[in-house]
Image (tube, rainbow, N blue to C red; front, side, top):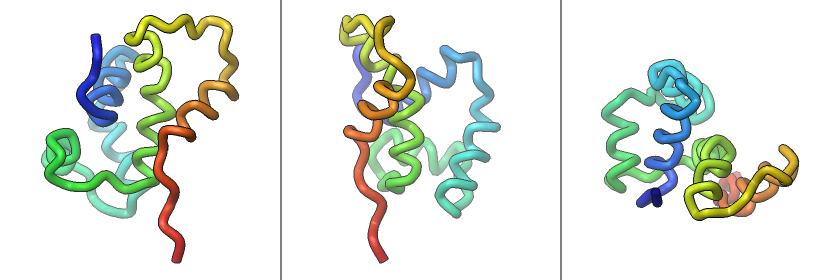
Length: 97
């Protein structure tokens, strides 16, 4: 299966891990400093609202294994550090202030 965007892949990864989306939304709220509810998450998934860089990094880290597996890549030989490096490479930088 392919995923149309990072948010969809992240949501699939959370479900595959049998994670609680409500708990994950609380983590995303803490990371972003905004209240992330189902409506905000849906607007991110549908491209109607930009996803903060810190949230994109978190999503990429959680979704990278699933994305690579769905592309037919064997990730069994990758270390956690290598998966983290891949996820970071697909993330946008945090805005500088």
